[in-house]
Length: 196
Image (tube, rainbow, N blue to C red; front, side):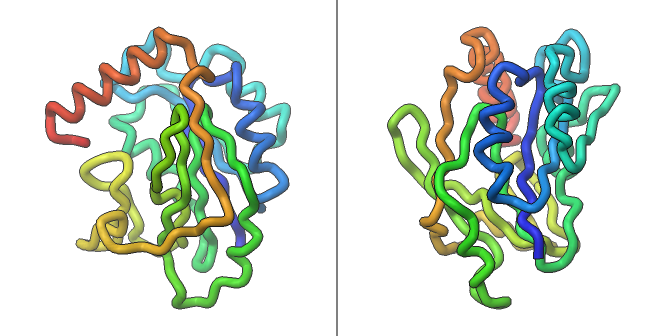
């Protein structure tokens, strides 16, 4: 069993090191997927601000880059699902840090659960998001970037336990006001199209 941290990046050099440092000693492997989405404003479809160089300096286990924009966020996130049976994925973005420890995963029995919610804090508002899930063949994102599917079953719509040993701290100040504005416009647009 391995715990694989999955980090979705695009021009995130300014605070990426903090994200990497928050997971480095708590996971077995780090996978970083770089690049823009076709519908997200960009000059180049890949990071040009030093993001890739930070990954290389940190000897990231797997770095996936694209020289054309990803079709959408679901396709991009699908790229980090490279594990083997019994591996666990922990999803974190480049404007977030992990607090707590994932060691308790080692004590989980085979059939205890395969997807778990964890605490997520955003500007002082705490909620739950599913960010921790076990590798299964056929696992994929569908309909939007937070709907994880196995066959015809949406795993994120079912009642799942809370893995309370960790919390993801989201800090929108990690990204510029302009980047946050573009991100909001992007999500508003895909919601209006029924994609989120």
